[in-house]
Length: 104
Image (cartoon, rainbow, N blue to C red; front, top):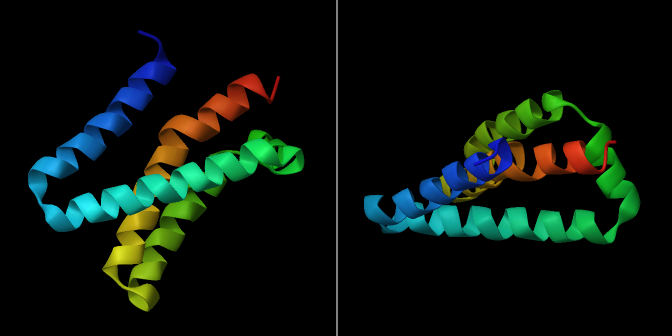
């Protein structure tokens, strides 16, 4: 099993593990997954946005997590947790994939 599929497995386990914890966390995880998927579809359809993802480094990943924590103060825990789940998926799965394949 390669590194990318391990990271995808970790993210899938995080989503599945949220099912066993409780209803609110499932909603957060589902909303975060949908947010991540919409961002992935947006990046895949706009070439210059995909180029930006490929050229950025992990500083952008850290900024996403900082924004997720900042949003808890202003938008509430639902949006903050959804952004946190989306950020985890972006950091673990999508950004490394794009940087490895498109960044070459």
